[in-house]
Amino acid sequence: MISPNNAFVIQQHTTPEGCHWDLMLQMGDVLWTWRMAVSPEQINTACLTIERIFDHPLRFLSYEGPVQNNTGTVKIADQGLFHLMSESTDQLCVDLQGSILQGKFTLTRQSANLWLFVHRA
Image 1 (cartoon, rainbow, N blue to C red):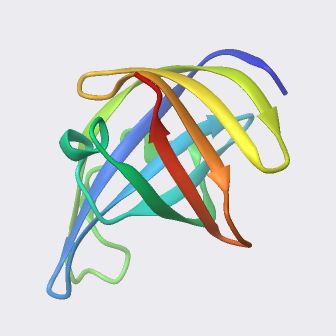
Image 2 (image 1 turned 30 degrees about the vertical axis):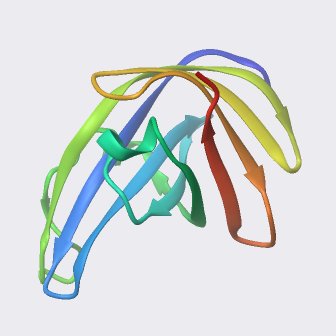
C-alpha cells in the first residue's frame, strides 16, 4: 500500500501513572498506533522499542482533551505529513515531515506487538 503523503500525529498522554506518547500514522481510514516511552524530541537520537496497539479513528489526528477514562490529558506533541516509502508485513519505511520529527524512519517488527523505531538520518 505505497501511498502519497498522509497525516501523522504524536500525542502525549499524561496520567497519574506517568506519561507516554502515541505515534499514529494514517493508513487508509484508520490510524495505525504505537505506544512510546519517550517524547518526539528524543526520537531523532534513539533506536526505540515501541509497542503496536489498537488502531484509532481518524478523528484522533487533531484530538486534545481528557484521556478516555478522564484520569489524565492528551495533547499533540508533533504532527505533520509522511510519505510511505515501502511496506512489508514486518517493516515500514516512512519519511516524516512534522514540526519535530523530520526525515526517514524505519519501523521493524521484532515480535507480535514490539517494533523497533529507528531514525535513518
